[in-house]
Image (cartoon, rainbow, N blue to C red; front, side):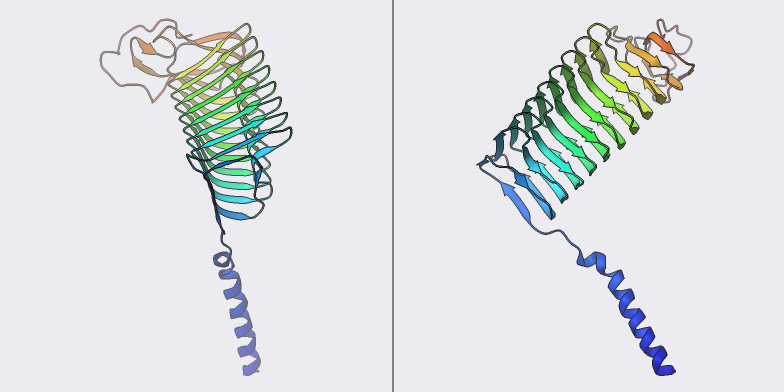
Length: 325
């Protein structure tokens, strides 16, 4: 009996060791670098440690339904573009991941597309942990997207550069999955009928921080439209729309808290239509710099307050703030 117990213990120990160390055995493999001009799709369906388009490198493709980088069913730990990725054609995409994972995506170069339904970066049922654009993403064409996350997860999306689209129904950033944080310190701009700056299409966006500019031009071109859930919006920058029936924020579902500083400074109140936020807090920086909200066809009720992001100063106490709503 003692020998049998010893045998069982040895087997159990071996199995335990196998499972405990299985994660260590799985590792990425390979580093791809593009340092010249290539004109074919760069495909990955394995676990790649890194993929880099250097400053001297470029990927340029002109054809319908093609991709600059195709990460279908693959995993890329780090993807860096400091060069140029350009596509031209219907449904052409600069960087595409379908049912795949990119842990870190950094763009300090340029990503450009031309064509109907084209996208700079498109994620479909995939995951990007951190996406940072410090360069430029530009698209041109009907229904073109700057960044599109379709039923996907982006933990942190940071734009310190520019995202621009032009064309009817073009979208700067479109989200329909789970997004934890969207930080914009750069510019997001669209032009064209029904072109939209940021769209949260039935998804969950936990926090939107805007210290930069989100702007649209064209009829029915809203800077931010929400049909899902946004927990918190902190706006100390500019969210603006220029055109008939176009608004800074068009909310058709749930915004829990909106903290806003845009308004008095420059006399550009944040225009708003649709369902009111549950909580609206004014950010006060001074008696000449505080949030103003301009409501059109708004419905529901909201709690009005002063944001904790406000500047604390004795000179503000007792002063009258005009045009708050």
